Image (cartoon, rainbow, N blue to C red; front, side, top):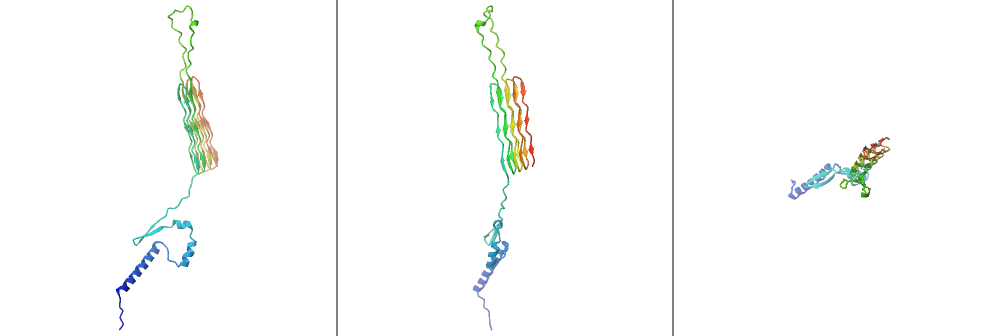
Length: 239
């Protein structure tokens, strides 16, 4: 009579082989692949692009478990060459109340080559009060009493209140080559109340080559109340 004797060592070898096969099969299922022969695996690897390989999830084994992490996808860089305009504030000088104009550079945004217009604030200068001429004692009349008061000096003009105009550079947006117009605020000078005009440069946008018009604010000067006119540059849009 023939009997089959099973030993402890043979059972351990069977269990070890079963566990190894289970781990290999689980790794193939989680990775989303199929175990191929060496020749087939070599052939398929050559047809996979580097981009596809870079986007594959990266997996690692941790305590008999597989952890996979998706790789971030690279996005194409977009955007153009954009330069914001310069803002130059106007100068303020003189004995009066003078305020230099503000310069606001235009904005630039878009996928093309865009340059915001410059803003140049107008200057403000005052006028010094006129001095009364000195009187020569020899020119005094002979019949004038000794205690007679001296002639009152002529009224000196008051110091001016001058404000330079504001310059606002135009904006530039779009996929084309766009340049915002320049805004030049007017100057203000004199002994009165003078305000230079505002200069607003035109905007430029569109897919073509567009340049916004220039805005030149008018000057203001004199002993009275003067306000320079505004200058508004035209916009430019098109293909």
